[in-house]
Image 1 (tube, rainbow, N blue to C red):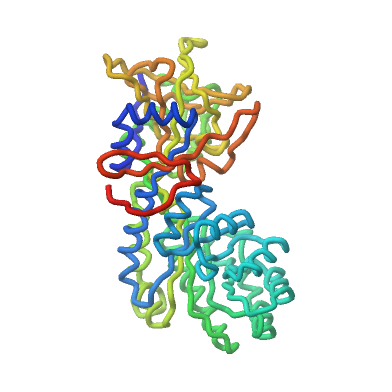
Image 2: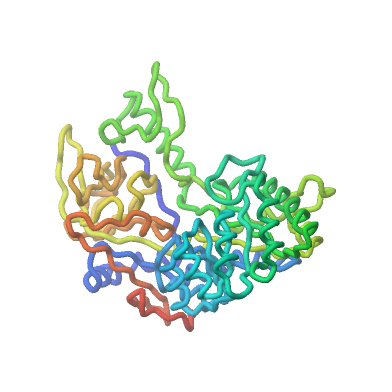
Length: 469
């Protein structure tokens, strides 16, 4: 008996590429396996969708692509060509942004920063999103010209404590530094980045930021920016009901009341006591069905408490504030896939089937995550015989499976068959890439659809241009 399927959502362009089995196998022959593929045209589509929402913001906006989400040079170049900004969090990302064609006025450095990164940011003349008071005072000491800065805030009443940002209790000290060093520090505005996608929590943070901005004006400062960070969700699943069905099958299997679809003792965060499954699974938000543009539109249209029922967008306009944001996942959603190949299929204890791939778990996800979306097996056409398998790969520990849950496949694959992990562009390609056992890092390749065919470019040589499909 096979487990429920959990189909991946695919962008039509990516689906068309995968339908061309000859093109997929040719890519593997040319660049090797495993292989990371990025689709700049999908990135451009995502950007257009966000811009469509933001074009209704009366006070204007600025999008900065969060480079940390994917190290792809092709995606960074696409962002630069599109005229948006970029958010970098290391000296290496700063160099990448400059190489991609971003001018200093379109680069923002975020995250906690040591002295070396601050020196690099000052030398490049970019905007600095300040994480703490030490950074602010160090910038003032190092700067030789006036530096544009944002204050990243934390300690919001409606949010969980955060290790990032300047707590509300320290804002007055920040204002003192800003006023004392007016010749070296220019306050553009305030920023936040919440570890949640909940609209009401974001609305509350906007309200708190407006209060801080009022306090800044009282100090004679003239901020004009409210930066709401990133954190917009992705849509992974093509069928939310199928996702729920798999989750139910997992629970039933953990209770021993049906076929087990979990490997070994892995319960994915669930606790089984007294014949009941308790708690919540630790899966990523793969069941989300709300797109990033929808979430952003909901935030902008939400009424802001204490402002007479006016929306967030209207209040920003009333206060002559420009909206900044740093989407990463939202821009690369469906714009990256990872392709590997079957090496062999084997049976282990109790009839369990392992499909061994020439990849390791952290090629497609962070080691501590389980992807609750099925890989796609691109076998040659044949008779369908659905069955459940576990995907295994490199490394040597018992828990080093690519899937620690059973995955439904239409039939057992053959050696050499391509296997596709969808939507790996956001962090999955890069967050914990390892070279254990001297395995090389996968090649990264940009795919462009032009004149009815797909053209592949090594990531570092891709140049945005005529994106007509």
